[in-house]
Image (cartoon, rainbow, N blue to C red; front, side):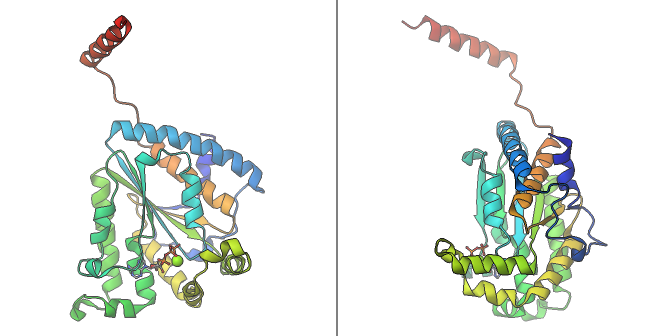
Length: 294
Ligand code: ATP
Ligand code: MG
């Protein structure tokens, strides 16, 4: 991988959130890249690399990779997932979207629905939103907590710290069992979000993406930013780092995400399973019998 590509993601990786401040990350940052052209070329190269790594991940069947995507509306989650994963064999990868919980889901703890969606060994699982909504939208809207089925006695001031603790433990558990977790917060600016909402309103082919609720949530912008910052401070770890990815330029966002995934896969030392002697003999016999066919 070109070294500039490797460096790209590293700058945005948080493995210890203690001193993290969201305002230190500029959503308009594009690193040393000034235009989309070079980025498109690098993205194409990274998509090719990713497909190679993914084949080995699948063949080796030991590790699983979980990629978590969180962002404000219109930050580009869907497009990033689509572009970055475009070269990957669909059989080796699954996207799960997490919406407001169903009645059945509310009958369980907040991590329950996650467990069912985790990727198998050899696969890449993508979470489009995730259990992190339970410390984001639910924090900004305490009425969701009140409207859920948690015993009121357990709804205390400490609940967010408790949830962070549960999440850290859960992610450490996954890491210890061979599921590699990487988390992406696509950090878009308020001005760019407005531009994208207006495009959804003004361009007929984008109308379907518009939701009036998204504008309502925009009114809580600062509360969401605070919730995101606190979430990163408490859940960025070595085992499961957050990448805080500038999201005002989609071409840059995609490249940073691709680079982070490649860096991660590269660190796993993936290789095709070795063929042993018995297997080699079997292959030779099969070849022999095929060649002898009339
Ligand atoms: P997206 O907004 O991710 O592009 P979408 O527009 O297709 O997806 P929505 O119907 O907006 O889907 O579903 C996502 C909504 O579900 C978000 O507003 C999100 O905050 C909400 N949500 C997700 N998880 C929870 C949760 N645990 N509690 C409450 N709301 C949640
Ligand atoms: Mg939505």
